[in-house]
Length: 539
Image (cartoon, rainbow, N blue to C red; front, side, top):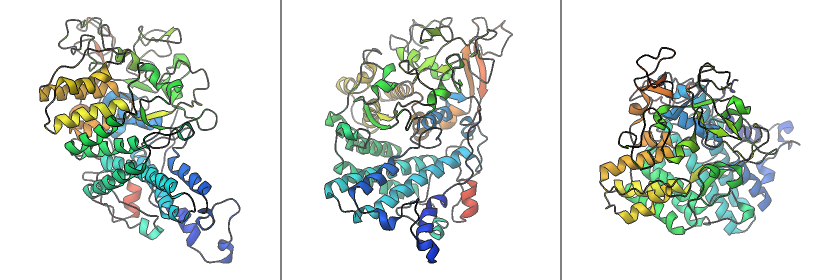
């Protein structure tokens, strides 16, 4: 199975429509095309505005990836961040030390982000001329400004300084833009998000479910402020979301990621899908071969080691941890997140990855670790794995709570048990998880707990890369040997496959380049086209 390679990269392609509309004065080209919509005839009614707004939201269905919205793309960010591996190593190559400026994956992220920014700019350039209710116009404008800000936030996270384009450009302008210092971009985004949050509604009626709310805009602002290390500001932002009392922590963890719960009040922001008409293919990638999938992803044992024992202690501290039975007595989220050989059952069948069996998921069949992803495996779904209509969660309420706690801690504010109970212990205390309450208030030890909690709570949701970059630990986490499933309890005499001194399969090694790979390269096709785009160092 091969993924589509993107070779045509922005900024030019998204400007082609603008060129076709304005670049020629011959009679033939002045005629309105029968199969296209022109800005000259389009921006008239509220219906037109809604259509254009839908275009700004559009995540593209089916096989689309390599962006900051779609299921496979966000899951791949966690693969890049060291939670696992993909069978063809496509996301792995971003952080294994082999990344170059010609790599299509990072180039496609750049392309798709600027495509959406161009759609947002086109909307913002024209919405003022539409005859419609001014209040609704203001809300739509705030939605689009938030979408554009989310794109720019991610562009600066991964590329550093990027061109800050606020309006539709001509081809000549697009091919001569320079990189804007990220601090200048961040300042612009803060204003955009604060002003948008003030206009957006806190909730939506059922007919508007999926559209951005003030909580979503503030959540994006909170991420930005954490990236900037504006801890006090971030705490204020997150507290505003908490005080809105719009969101909850659901009792059930595993089922939260199923289509039946796609409108849960735990969800702050999600990408919308619909079976048959606007579906996605993640389940085809995700499901092991036993259930008809491609088993495209494997999980690293380093992630599994982060899940505490049921007494709330780490595996290094807990008397409940058994080195010969390492998956017993663990945080329930371990089993909700990872498929473990001879332990996990799905739709009445046991997942088997042991070598030298006839299981199609035996770990030595392909480039697998022996573990698979259990999160997002929707047991209620019985349709075509390439036609799944479940929404994809981009931000959910536990992020708000844990980010508020982290921001308070990093700001130097005093931490007491009441604050812990209002944040991290709400996340750990949902009935299907029911982990012991955190009581630690020592700043350094609590920081370690928060970071571990974020990793296990949000595994494969696309947040880990953001975290290790802003914490400055990407090189530490990614320049290492990774392991897979436990193969033996007697590693000293085991000879079948390479194992470490605990009996875990020696799986893969990454050689992340410290001081280089923290940023992605500007796409080669962009720097060749536009000499004003200076490349990131050592690419």
